[in-house]
Length: 626
Image (cartoon, rainbow, N blue to C red; front, side, top):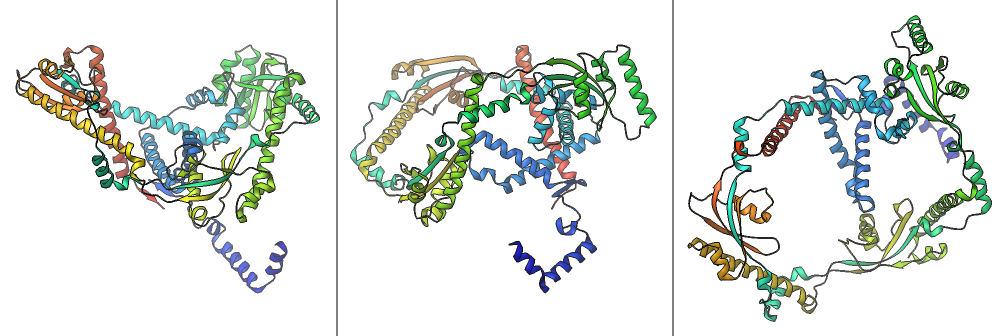
């Protein structure tokens, strides 16, 4: 290919293209070709640019969260970058508006507080102590630099200050709290009886004619699901596990013994002084001399680190940097650490970061376990490594072989793999291997289902791969009456039983409205009855369906009753009457209940205030989306 390019570059057309590119670079600069313009942002909020990298970082975070929530069964459509990008951009715009508003209000967080927060985060600690190495590596894995993480955290704090301050600027009036109490703490006297579905089910019978009529009227409900029977090859790393050569284990053990985890480790604290941009050499030297003087006079190292160190990550922890096995810090620091006695402060040590005063607070000797102790772990690691390598090699070969093969049998034979056959798989498969969205989509895709090709080899997990092929396709068919007779009978019996319960409930309500008592009606019908005096809608003493219905019913005039019934999801009927309604009175409620109602009203106000504030910010902002 390189030779072809070299030959073609000699042609006239190629020379013209090169000449055009050179002129473009000269006139407009390389950015005009690489970036396509002067701005690489995807949007602007009041003049502040939002970069594609910011959007992509939010999208990546959303994708990781979705994968963590749904695992292997996640629908690939949920990870669609276009949809997530639109959501991410709107989220960033809303956040940027809040940060700008917080800045205009002069809300701030000090560097000292930032350092205390960062050093106190458990994800950056080892054995309860802040680790700069862990801090940097954790941020790198999440796509942050220390500077960008600090900026993001600082913005989070400002936004939280703003959000907590907004509800605090609003308050509920006594009249609002009293009105809420009238509704929330309202009491009702409720008497009710239960008509259980089980009481009528035994007496319900369904005829063959009714079953046939239901079948004919609802034929569309009795078609079988479309399904496919699949042949498939499933590969797991565990399928390639093999015995490990003893010499390999011994070599790995020797390498492991020399590893950092078995070396002598020093726990180090430091005071870092960094020359400021506007600080003269003389002033910087004076600062160094002042710190050294205080240390020579026996000053407390941890206290001095907190007050004088420019390393915000370790200052709040007394300068503690965690452990080093000789390779965690710059060479000059490691040389000083190696020569220090415990709890002895070093002379000033210069590195690219600045000037350090170092103390070793703990030293622990590393001792490797014996070969016999480590053998099981080493064997497992070697087997996992080699089986994963064998798996990936087989997967790559299978991809090549299956692409043009007429079936999976040929590739399976060549690679000594097993071809399995699935049970029928439907489009809404909910269990088993083929409930996986990627496999299910492939099984019913045009390429596999209609054109009869082998699927690609899908990676369900780093150690789990599957390829499939449709062997049999069954279209939806109307199932014969006999195969769905029992299903229809159950449905009809339930419908008729529920209708019978409703008729009994209507008769009971009619008796109550005619002047009968709940007790008398229940006794006459042979059902149990109950009473709740002073019931409240959120007390939990009533069936939820009854509470919703009884408190939605209009309040009866004083001395009168109102009656009705409601059905529960299980098919029981609750026939009830409400005889007294007493509005809640805030002053008569216990202090805890009053506080709960006040919190409820304040919370509703807070939500409304925040929503209105965000809406107002958007309306007044200058937002441009490219």
